[in-house]
Amino acid sequence: MTLIVEVRQQLGDFSLDAAFTSEHGVTALFGRSGSGKTSLVRVIAGLARPNAGRVVLDGDVLLDTARGIFVPRHRRRFGYVFQDARIFPHMTVRQNLGYGRWFSSNAGATGDTARIVDLLGIAALLDRRPAHLSGGERQRVAIGRALLSAPRLLLMDEPLAALDDTRKAEILPYLERLRDEMRIPIIYVSHSVAEVARLADSVVVLAAGKVEAIGAAAEILSDPALSSPGHRRDAGALLEGTVAEVDIHHRLTTIALKTIRLMVPGCNDTVGRHVRVRVPSTDVMLATVRPENISALNVVAGIVVSTGFGTEYFSDVRIDCGGDILHARITELSYKRLGLKPGMPVFAIIKTVALENL
Image (cartoon, rainbow, N blue to C red):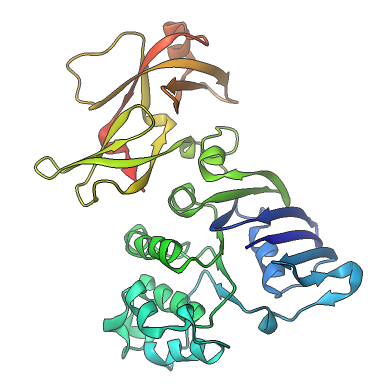
């Protein structure tokens, strides 16, 4: 799948001038509220006409203002999941799903009701009405309805933004299954680092209506300059590895990265599974000698790659740990006391409880 998007649109005082190409998997449109994410996805969906632009999916031209082409939204065969579920309150879950199936032009894999009901874990909800569902359950039904329309592309506009942390934790595993099992290309709009780190293959960073950066999720979310549109605590490293060991007795999982291993909380994983680990830079301490008799289980040797000062009181330090790059955000005073400089050996101390495999 190749999606080409080029949009120029004036919305009052706000100017949207953005372009990107998405090749496969989950592409996240990421940035602060008001950066233009929703405006851009509405153009892709055919819900808005820009002043100028193109939208092309696998060679099929859906929008080309220069040639006067505008394919209406109902002919684009895109699924759209909004921030609020928008399922019909007078229908049961089964009827809401049937409404999505009604729009499907084929009965292929994505039109298989039983498969999608199982994928989203909503079999027990089929005879309920939306008033008797939790927020997370309503969103799963909305996703199921979108999938049953057999979309060529799924657009998800802040689908978890209206949910509390408990409901987000409930629905994220289903979104992972959707990504891994359905193989439908997804444009995922979010301002949450945690969601993007867990779901996205590639990231398009938007700021003030323009594309600030494009790249693989691990690359973009590990860049201190770009990883925190919402809050500076979002900065950190996104690492990829496999589950090496599960310690049921101590409820810990060991993740093997390129050359190092990290312990993370929990013991519900399967050995050999590919996972991501998000290491927040504010949860990484540095030492010039290996510490002893401390509670932290993750002490990793590395070499300082670079240092840089933020706009406030901190310094961002990049550490190469045998090919795995960690980021530490420390105070200017700590930086001076340690005498840090590129090429210097250090030890990174990471609290186990600060980590989560994704």
